[in-house]
Structures are given as structure tokens and as C-alpha cells.
Amino acid sequence: MVFPARLIVGTLLLVFIALGLLYSAVTPLFEAPDAYSHFAVIEHIARTGQRPPTANAKAQAWKQMAFHAPLYYYTSAVLISGLDASDFLSTHPRNPHRQIGNAGADDNQNFAAHAGDTWQGAGLAVHLVRFYSLFLGVLTCLGTYWLARGLAPGTPWLAALAVLLLIVHPQFVFLNGVVTNDVMVTACSTLSLALTVHIVRYGLTWRRVGVLGILVGCASLAKASGLSVVPIAGLGVLWTAYHHHLTWRKTAVYVVLMGVLWAIIAGWWYAENWITYGDPFGTQHIVEVTGERVGSVDIEADVRALFYSYWGLFGWFTIMAPQWFYTWAQMLLAISGIGIALSLWRAWRQRTFKADDLALVGLMIVAVTILLVSWWTFNQRVLASQGRLLFPAVGIIASGIAWGLLSLIRAFRHIHYGKFIGYGVAGGLLAGMGLATITFPFTVIAPTFDPGEQIPVAEWTPLSDAISVNFREPWNDTACLTLWIAPPPVQASATVLDLDLVWETHCPLTGFWSEFVHIVPGDDTAEGYEAAAIIAQYDSMPLQGNLPLPAFKPGHVVQETVQIDLPATFAAVDVFRISIGLYDATGTFIRMVTDSPTDNHVELVIHVSSR
Image 1: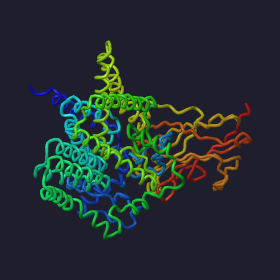
Image 2 (image 1 turned 135 degrees about the horizontal axis):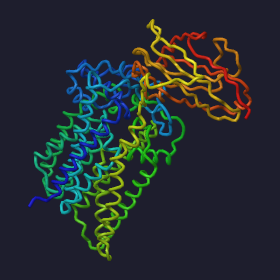
Image 3 (image 1 turned 90 degrees about the vertical axis):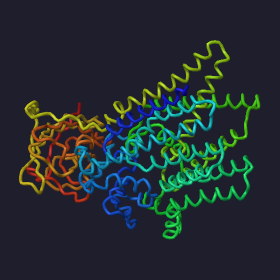
């Protein structure tokens, strides 16, 4: 009879694919860490057949990714080689007001401006690469299954549980639905670790060593962090040779075979870096492009950010999960840790340790330690508190948590109703994680990028006291946009100004314009006030960055409320002006033209109420 865990794992993989597609569908293009730069490398290789130049990389779309190991980029470029994706810079320009890395931001959480993610050109190319990322995620799940089976061959349910833990891991699912080289290094590293465990368990053969050499080579060529599996594979081979009493000659041949395959696949890359930069990893250049870390290291903040982003921090590190989720993840780790401690205590008392078991546990601990040390070393130079950097060990971590939960269930069996308590605790923890993973696309990610509603003009009526001003793009003789605005009531005690704006679209717009709202004391409406006179301002693309003007539909209106924080000095202001306009924040800073007396902005004079 075939153990049903395999059938369960097959079902879990289908669930993972469905969840990955869901996360990919609700996450707009490029709204993931470095996705824009990753795709820029892929597009350049697909178009030219060459890696992008590293000269002046900081000013290019690919930035520090030009110095990264290229396997993910090469293989992704093959997928889109027949497509013209060169328009992604113009169809999805970077949001000039983006607040990437600011998980507390209330607006402009989008990295790019989205005028509609199509399935043509660059849009289709990005979606194809995302599907490829999801395929690599499936390989990671399979690798985790084989890894856990090798770690505990007598407990096949542990392997199924380890895969389940990946599927109820929101950040893992999210990352495998976007464009990032982390998915490839994670897949190759997990498969390398799984085969290393298999070799320790069942011995060395030419085929196993050959495949292992290929896998560690692919992991190393996927990203520099993939090098972490090289010493683990080497130690695994040496331990197995020693444990099985192989001759030193045969052991040396095995090691040489693995080394030669690694050198053929990945060695050239590190040799090229060494010759070109004097550094096999190109770390200094990556640091220069990314930006050297300034100030002292806050260990507590860095570890907290690492924990949050390992479990669930979406978008470009702009969208946090609800706080209860992080508490739930902490509970999962704590309870699993108790189970691991109980299992180790029981094994020590019963003297059930075996040499292979100890060797494998040691290898897994070393693998995680290497990643942690590498992360911490890099984090001293660049702000890199990013949980995805630990994903090459995600299979080990999932297997460890699964081991802890199963050990806890076994421990509870010795007490009255213990079986129900153990299964209840483990099941409850997994159910909570599963609920989070299923609902976050709808409750956390999609609302953040919601472009809002566009109302047909026939279904909308302007306020009776609203004024209207027409805007036209400088290269267009027709005013395609009308701003409707009513003077807001303001009290002297106000700390926030709520300004209701309504944009009516008459014809298509092509520029990715940004709104500006300036608060200036006094009632002098003369054009050309000094910037120093501005006491408060707001700059953004419409709808908090989520709806650029090219996405406006002719014959519709867009309503939004702009909130502007007022300084303490505002209490002394009796009358002030609100200046509103549209400008190009991507570099030219030209303004749209209006039919108002001020030519390129609207002026409202507001008298402050003392009540």
C-alpha cells in the first residue's frame, strides 16, 4: 500500500499553485522587492543577448542586479525572448513619490505607476516570468518534501507537514508569485540540501555526486547566497565517505567530480568577478549602488524586521500583515521549539541518537548558521533586514517546525485526552496560518493597490459651491481634464486639512502627472510665490499613487480626499491660500496648463474660522 502522504503532498502542491496564482493576480507588476531591477536585467538579456553593462549601474533600471549571479536572468530571458518588452519603462514608470521600505506609510505604497496591467508586451513578459517563479516554488516544495523524508525516513508525515508549512507561509507564497532571483536560489539550495541528506542516509554513487555537483553549481550561479550549500554538500560527501569506510582515492575522486561540475556551471562567474573587481562576489559594487548603511546598527530593529519580512511583509516592504499574524507566527515557533526540546530530551534519555542522525542535524544547523552569519555580515554594510535572504534554508526551517509539532503531539499522548490536546494545538496553529495565507490577498494586498472607482459623468453631480478649472497637457491643444473643488471649512485648531478633489476626464491623457497642493499664508494671489512661504504641502499621483492619469477613463470622474498635515504655526494663520496643480515629478517638473488666471495652478483663498 502506497503511503497516503504522497497523495496529500500532490494535493498540497496544487493548492500551492492556486495560492501562488492568487497572490500574483492581486499584486500589480513590479510591486515586490527589486522586481523592477530584476526584470530590467531579464529584458536586456532577452533583447541583446548580453548582460547589462555595470558602468553607471546606479542610474540604470537594473541597478545592483547587474552584479548579481545570472542564472535566473538567463533562464527567464529564454521565456520572453520572442516578446518585445522594451516598453516597460514607459508603460510602468517608477512612482516618484514611492515610499518603499516604509511599512508605516499611508500612501504611495506602490513602487510603479499602473495604468492597467495588460497581457501584452511588457505585461505579458512579466506574467510569464512570474509563472516561471511559481514553477521554481513548486521545486522548492518538492525539495522540502525530499529533505524532510531524508531527515526522518521513519516519519513520512513529517515531510507532508513540512510542505504544508510552506503553503501556509504567506511570504513564501507571495515571493514565488513575483519576479525575483530569490526563488531560484531557494529552489536550487533546497534540492541540494535534500540530495545531501539522501547521500548521508543511503551512500555515495557517481550519479548522486554528479547531480549534487550540478545542483550546488546552479545554486551558486543563481545568487551568491547559494554558495552556502557548497560546504554543506562537501561535508556531507566527506562524512559519508568516512562513515562507509571509502578509500581516500575514491573519496577524492567524488570530491573532484563535484568540484569540477561546480566550476563548469558557476566557477566562471566568480572567477570573472575576481579578475574584474578583485572580489569574487562583487560585494563592494553592490554596496555602492544600493547605498552604504549610515549610522549604528540597531540589532533589535534589524531582527524584528527580519522576522516580519520572513513571515509576511508584502509589496516593496510597504504592506504589513495585521499584528496578530506576527504574534501567531511567534506562537508557532515557540510551541514547535518546545516540541523539539521535548524530543531531544527523550532521545537523550533513551540513548536513541544515531550517527547519521547527529550528522544530519549538525549539517542543517551549520547551513542555517552560515546563512545567518552571511546575512549579518552583509547587514553591517547595507540595510538588509529582509527575511527572503534566509529562504535558501526555508526547507530546513519548515522541517524543523514540523518536527517540533509532531514531537509535541507525541508528548501529549502520555496524558489523559493528550492526543486531542496535541492535535488541537498543532491544528489550531496551522489553521490560523492557513487562514492568514488565504485571506491576505483580499484583506491586505488588494486593498492597498485599489485604484478606486471611476464614476460615469451622467451619474455624478458637482457640489453647488464647487469651482471648475480645466487642465491640458502642454503637447495637447485640448483640455482633457477638469478639476472640481469646493473651498473647505477650516478652523484655527485644525491639525489636518481634508481637501476633496474631483477630476473629470474628457479625453485620454498620456502623461504620468503628479498632483501638488501647497498651503501658503496670506491672501496675495499673485503668481510666483516663494517656495519658502509654503507651510504645508502634498505631492502624489492621484488616489494616493494608485491611479495615474493615463488610467483615467474619458467620460468619468475620479473623487479623492487629500489629507495634509498642518504645522503648529497654522494656529496663528487667519487667511491662507491653497494652490493646486499637476506637474511631472519624474524629472522635467513641467506643469500642466490651466485656464485659470495663474496659468499653471489653481488658487483658493480660505478664511480660517476661530470657532
